[in-house]
Image 1 (cartoon, rainbow, N blue to C red):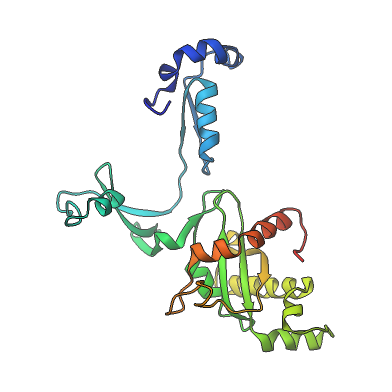
Image 2 (tube, helix red, strand yellow):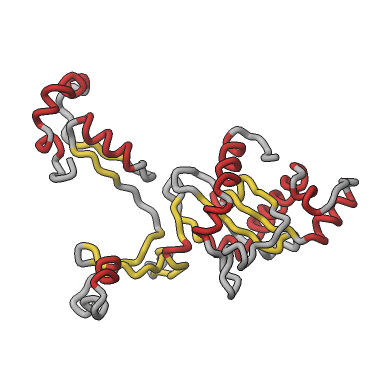
Length: 261
């Protein structure tokens, strides 16, 4: 399968032994299968290509994506850096690393860098830095890290609340406990999540850009924990590694309709 695109040729002998019955179950007439609207995991694509004994391709459209250029006037590569050249060129196309969005008048708007963009399972691109900038406009938030898994349809976030704002809410609602205990309170999390989404709606964020679940972190992101740079930019891979268990739990509880404790 990996050597040639028409995979029924690459494993003809095994098709006859193992997959002929499945092929007959599909009436033996399928030569091409298409999947659209959103990406499939690679292992599912490979499974379908092998077991259907046909060409299986994915195709889906979205107004956002990485800007790629191809022209005789482009540079041929990085000086004495074939490794970098290989990273940015593919089939003659130069991958700029910029994410563009087509506008109604036919022009293209650059909205972010590729490293700050990810795609949700329904095919929507998310410019995460834009969302974080919007959510931090809430008076309840000191900092926020928004995360989206490309095999999930919604976003979650780790939020460092403003201590005074959360303590004022606790006093008004007669909630006991110190700041760390308040961050573990399900009602406090629900309150902050709701207020953040209200802020997002006021700023024009779309439905899939709303937060489905949040974790309240009482300790600010720090350089010492390698979660931010000296200029206070978020280190996303490090944040994901540090909060992976919490993120997994947020997704699980959100899909089950529960509030994470």
